[in-house]
Amino acid sequence: MAPAPQGSGLRRFLDPYYVGNVVLCAGYLLVRTWVLNYSDLTWSRVLVDKSELLQWERTAFGTLGAALFIKFVRRQSFDGFLASAFLYSKAVLALMVWVCDVRLFIYYMVFYWIHSLLTTQPLYQGPANITYLDGQQMGLEITGPKADKSVRWLVEFYATWHPVCVALEPIFASLSVQYGCECLRFAKVDVGRYPGLARDFGVDVSGQSKQLPTLVFFEHGKEVARIPHVFSDGSVNRGLFRKKDIVKGFALEDYYKKLRWRRPKGKEKADGAPVRTPNGDAAQKDAAAKKAE
Image 1 (cartoon, one colour):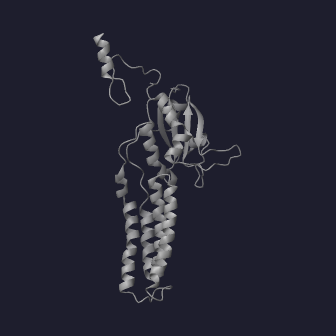
Image 2 (cartoon, helix red, strand yellow):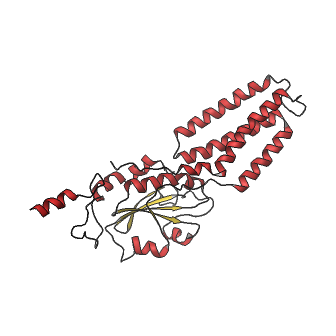
Image 3 (cartoon, one colour):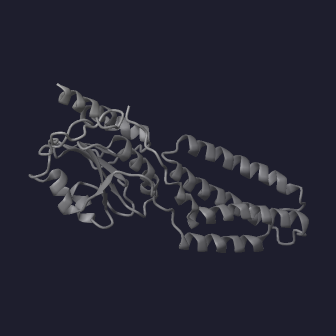
């Protein structure tokens, strides 16, 4: 098995998107404290007695907990789970604020709207071994007549505004570090900047697209597999983008075992150059033994 990558880019969780969402969720504690200690329930359209608030909380938070548990089990990445968790939590908390006080609900929605306008979920910024391609580079590196056909490529067509693409970022980066080698490389194409290139490879880039992100595996310069699969009638299969699904779907473990010690054509090792070993160190012992002979 390929070694797991080190480092995770956790600094992105200090982005205003995450901090603001935590503040919005924690703000309910202040609302609850104020209602229980100072409110006369004049502005509540639901509560008659403050003891009813606990019943509402049990129902609302119980439902939220069940929904978040299901999302966590089915998560594709932790980033994607957090985005869903914040969305569901803010919806439930907005309902609870409305139950407590209509005026506070209006304030809450204003803050929610401002936060949504000013922040977006940040992209993963951790370790990665990825090549970013445009149309010219795509031909030179992968599909063109002069491209090195001994190199296999896994290419992601992505959009920075698409939530599933954002959620896939840490997974794809991790795969590139764990399985990337000279004959098995990873690349990305920004469909927002190069929509024509995406269409050339049959990727729908519209706002309602079911093909974002799309992962395409190239062998000998030709496409051999993709996720999600597109049928002959144009329908699109639901893509699974968990790390284990991608590894299995493209047989990355098998390719890595077969290709990790190979070098691309035209890049033969110079005499005396270090040789990569499974431990990641230079094979100095072999060189020393040859000199001794």
